[in-house]
Amino acid sequence: VRLTVFVATGVAALAVLAVVVRSLRRGDRGSPRGDRATTWQFVRWLTAAVAGLALVFIVMEGITAALVPPCV
Image (cartoon, rainbow, N blue to C red; front, side, top):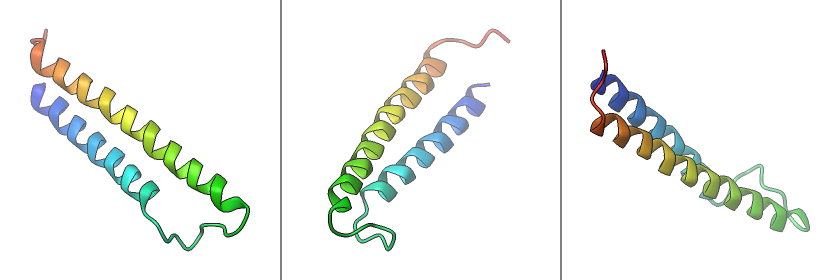
């Protein structure tokens, strides 16, 4: 049970890290220019911040699985 939780936690953490890296990467071809650029930068920053917060909670759940014995 613990191994399954650790693997699932690792996969979820990698997915969140991919979202953070993708949202903070500069030079996207789809990025708007001009007036919308500031809004686009804010949305990218907010995406990275929310994903980072999600990563904290994912790790907290994984730690809980390590500390509490399974009742199987």
